[in-house]
Amino acid sequence: MSEERKKSEGVVNPSSGKKKIRVSNKTDKPDNIVIREAEIEAECRNLEKELPTFMRGFFSYLHSSHLPMSRRAYLLDIRFFCRYLITDTDITDAEDPRHITSDDFNRIQGADINLFIDFCRNYTVEDEESIHVFSNSNRTLARKKSSLTVLFKYLYREGVLRENITDKFDPIRVQRRTEREIKALDDDEVMKMLDAVNTGENLTKKERQYWEKTRKRDKAILILFLTYGLRISELQQLNISSFNFSRGEFKIFRKRGKESLMPLNNRTVLKALDEYINEERPNEEHIAEGDEDALFLSLQGRRMTERAIRELVKKYTSIGMGTSRDAGYSPHKLRATAATSLIGRGNSIYDVQELLDHENVSTTQLYAKHKLNTKRDLIGRFEWDDEFDK
Image 1 (cartoon, rainbow, N blue to C red):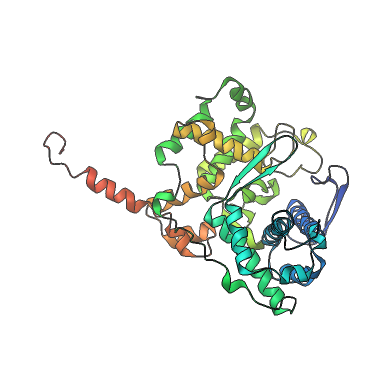
Image 2 (spheres, rainbow, N blue to C red):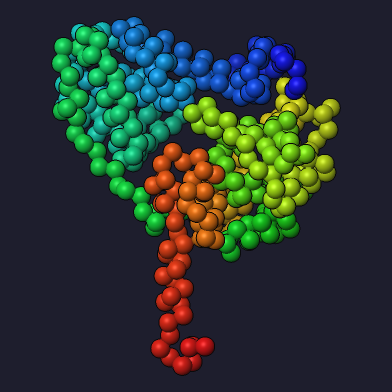
């Protein structure tokens, strides 16, 4: 929209399903990004209401120092810890996390946190219908420990706790990721995947029925992932208005609240977008209220959810790899595919770092799979038998 003040009324709130959101948007962000941020903010406030009141200062600290997504992750970890104190320890007599007191927290020792982290490795949650089994990696455990470390250090610094027990937390060894652990499609698998979305080959009968109506959309999604290495949230939030075809660019909204302009000069991308937008995307009368600007739409005319995009990618990547649907890759693996493909074609690691929005180049270096390919090429050409030495 070009108006100085954008107003959008009558947008259905996905979290409530009843009330309507009225947006008064004075920023450069599209309304869907503003709404998404507001929903995360509301979720954070609801989580805070479930936690002890003596943590209010900590909530303010998180609000001023962390972005909403990170803040939500901290609050979820802390709520889980408080529930653990109630159900699995005798540290507190509270029956609800809100009623846990600062005196209860002063009884917590470093050993109690270590027991909690060990509990988090494998645990079950039972409801009326089923038993859910959870198993967490060391990386997830390290994040939970980090959330508690930040909380306990803050409470000690503010005088709520008498002792800083964080030095007694056991270290968690997080295995360094190596080239072998980077999962990505190779070029042959990419071509098989794209062939499937072009022809419908290797789809089940039911999948082909959907494919007939969405193949151009599906291809545009895969091409954008493969070319730009987008995160799923960045792709899901794309709008028609995100694209300026005359200037050859489009805008995405990154993690940490950053905006980024991406070049729109790739002919494969331009063709895939043109075919989808002009030949397959529904007309406005078939689009749900509030989603008129959304780029990728479901068959119901609503903005596609991240879950639907994940399932789409999982389906096509499984065909590319020749595996079952359950073994298909996530959109993040297509981000890895973009990185390894770009580096493997001789592009600078620093240029790929900029494209993928990695804070540290060491993250990008993990995708330097071309080193492994070089070894394969060397060995593949090094034959001792005259029959093969050609």
